[in-house]
Amino acid sequence: MAILYFDEAEVGKLRTAGPYQVSKDEIIEFARKFDPQPFHVDEEAAARSVFAGLTASSAHTFAILISLLSKTQPFSLRVMAGLGFDELRLPAPVRPGDELGLEVAILEKRETKSHSDRGIVRNQIHLRNQKREIVLQCIGTVLVACRPVPNS
Image (cartoon, rainbow, N blue to C red):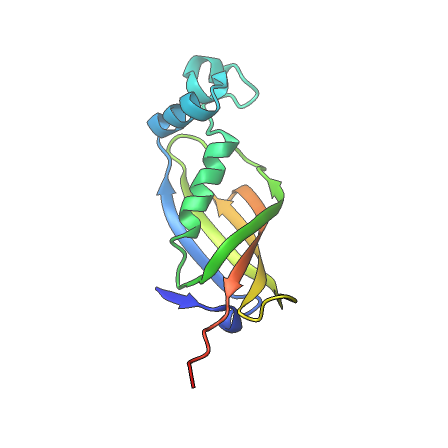
């Protein structure tokens, strides 16, 4: 996989990752530890919920997104640090058996004012299920290293 520096990142460039298969056992295990709501850990209670079935917690869905970000193709950015996520939405639930895929497009980039060795990149992020429904969308902002200047 190619690693791109800030200088090489182009607005509009798309990278993808996945698929990631979500199992019922994983949903329940994650939720028991981090978000023990009945609709995440109990199939009978989940069937009676607004979701009408077992769903992954939002924290679990976000954790899958973070995992997939490190596996993007055909390139990855030389990220120095994550700066935050804006406009995070979860328009559809993640269910057992879902196959999730990640799409990340560079929205904009700008040089930092205080450091010439890095820049800031904003990415539009979509996590989709096998039906192409968006299950998580957000804008992620990262600090990206510039290509090092060779010593003269």
